[in-house]
Length: 310
Image 1 (cartoon, one colour):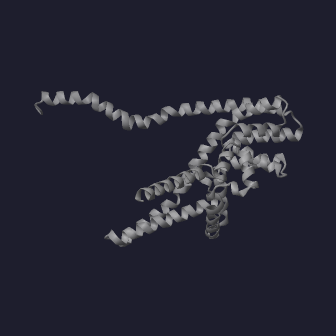
Image 2 (spheres, rainbow, N blue to C red):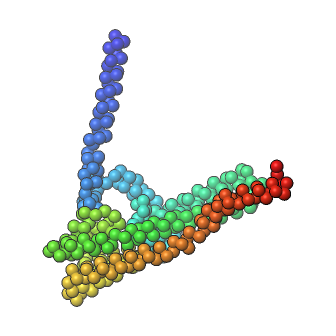
């Protein structure tokens, strides 16, 4: 009887484990997620807008709760500061899915948490409580600017990625336009076949055009979002070509040649800066080690000659 009970228990446990594994692997949400991974950014954004249940649980449930809390807290901040923070998050491509209000909540929470922890340590362990409390307040104030530094780094990384990808994008658009596609169709083809921040931004511009916005306004919004000089110059040329009826192919060809020249000049500029940047590691790290290796035998020999050491 005990053997039968044990066999039934093991069989039930194995059945539950297999059922749970199959449910996790072949669940509807995971099938939808795998299908979305095969789509481009433009198609994925359109699918999420049409079917909200295709988005992950974090975006469907947890994100709206955080947005309500962020809305209540951001109402205390000046409107101009909130707009600048939102614009910087937009330029950075909303890193980690955070907009201006979410980043404001992170800044406030981090400052309050660090300040509270510093205050507890000051009260519990410090001899001079007043000075320790002042240090905790200053530390909390410094933590307030840490997310700003992180956001600035993400903005620089994204803008560098946009500059690197722009010449290749222009070549692809030129090939597609000369093959007979229109500009919007060429951009759609590029968005579907490439990944990265530039394709994401053009996907947003395409969605704005599909929603009824004019191409000029959508391209101007793209230039404002990215805040990259080379991309702004290209968009300005495309808007002017649309106004005056200039051939799109000739504009793309000239812009591609000009932007490649600018990219080469930028690379040469970085190469010229490299020797100046190498001075500090050479002086602080390599030169002391070299002097130690070269001078130690001479110092030892001189010391032995004067009888300082045996």
